[in-house]
Amino acid sequence: MLQIEELKVEIGGKEILQNVNMEIPKGETHILFGPNGSGKTSLMMTIMGFSGYNVTHGKITFKGEDITYMPIHERAQLGIGVSFQRPPTINGLKTKNIVEICGMNRSVDVNELAKQLDFSDFLDRDVNHNFSGGEIKRSELLQLMAQEPDLLLLDEPESGVDLESIVLIGDTINSLLHKGIKFPRRGLSHIAARTKSALVITHTGHILDYITADKGQVLYEGIVRCSRNAREILKWIREYGYEECVLCSN
Ligand SMILES: Nc1ncnc2c1ncn2[C@@H]1O[C@H](COP(=O)(O)OP(=O)(O)OP(=O)(O)O)[C@@H](O)[C@H]1O
Image 1: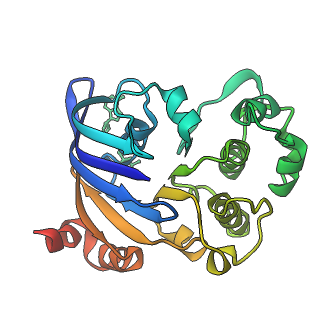
Image 2: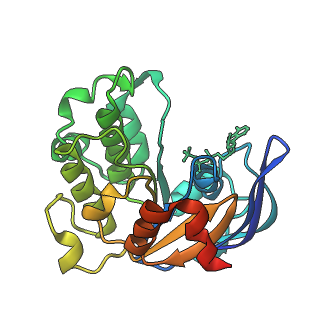
C-alpha cells in the first residue's frame, strides 16, 4: 500500500528526515514512536504532500504509484487521509461543510456520521473554534469518516482525550480500518480482516489498548531505527528510554 525508500526531507533548508525506509502493506496498522522533534509529524506531512516539506532524495509510492511530488489533493483523491495533532481553527467554515467537502463525490450522510461520533451539536460551529482537545480529535475523525481513506495517517489520536472518550476514538478508528463497517462497535479488530492501512503516532501507547497494531517503528533523529512488535518497543522505551531502545538496531 505505502512504500518509502531512502527518504530525505528538508524544512526551511534544514534536513529533518535523513533516511526513512518504511513499508505498510494493505490492511496493516503501524505505530510510529520517537522522541519529541525526531520528525514524526514531518514524515506524515511529507506523505500527505504539504508544502514546505521538501523531498531532496528518495521516493514515496502509494498503491504502486509514485506520489513523491504529487499535489496534496491528488493524494487525498488517491486515498490518503490525515488527522492532525493540532489542526487549525477555520473561522467562517462550519464543521458540517468541511465534512461535506471531505465526502465530496460520495453520498455521505453528515448527520448520521456525526451521530455515531456523538458530535451532532458541533456541526454548526466553525471548524475547531474553541473546541476542547477531545472535541478536536472527534472533529478530525468525523472528516476521515466522510473521506474513507485507504491509508490513515493519525497524529497522536489519543492526546487530550479523556478515558471514556478514548473508547469511542478507538472504536471509530477500528471502523475506519474495516471497509463497509460503518458503525463503531467494540472488538471489530479481532473478528474481521482490515482492508485499510494506518500509520499512527503515539507517545503514551494508550491507543494500543483499542486498536490492533501489526508493527511498531521508531524514528530517531530523522532515521527509522527499529521495526518490530509495537508493544515490545513501548516496553523498551518505558524501561530504558529512546537512546537505549535504538541501540538494538546497531
Ligand atoms: N515549518 C518548520 N520550520 C522549521 N522547523 C520545523 C518546521 N516544522 C518542523 N520543524 C522542526 O523539525 C523537527 C521535527 O519536528 P516534528 O514536528 O516533525 O517532530 P515530532 O517527532 O513530530 O515531534 P513531537 O513528538 O514533539 O510532536 C523539529 O526540530 C521541529 O522544530
